[in-house]
Amino acid sequence: MEWNTELFLLLMGFIIILVILIVIIANLWQKNRTVQAYQAKYPSRYVCLDGDVVRSISECLVDNFLYRNGIAHKYEDVIVKSAAHQYKYDWYLPDLDLYLEFFGFSGKKYKETMEKKRKFYRTNHLSMMEIIPSDLSDLNTKLKEKFGKQWEKIAHGRHCPHCGGILDDRV
Image (tube, rainbow, N blue to C red; front, side, top):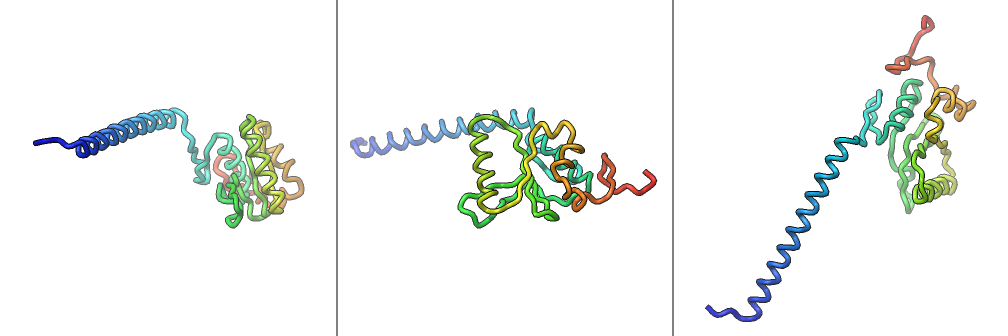
């Protein structure tokens, strides 16, 4: 059988494409194994007392604070679904029509994202309260101060610091 040039080039092209695909798949497989190993060692999903699944221990602390104080909240969804650029909020408090944002990172790129998000809230006339890492040192005091007079509207009685259940007058 005689090989013609076109058939040979076609076969070589097919072999080259096959080798490239194998290399890509091998790289993706290796990257996936690395990501899975990292995620197993450093989980990025934490389950809160109320069942919310959050992305960090810091967010877990804030979410548990809201739950323990009987504050109705919704965790992480798109802020305004009709906007050209959509941002996700950390928590939304429907009783106050207020968004809570935990700004827990630093760095130039993160600060740019924070500023864009702040501008987005201002532009869309949405109420937003920022929570920063230093607030975590004493959530009971610092968040109550940040809420100010609104605290009475959203905090529903005294709650157990462990389970979030409402406590009666005996405690």
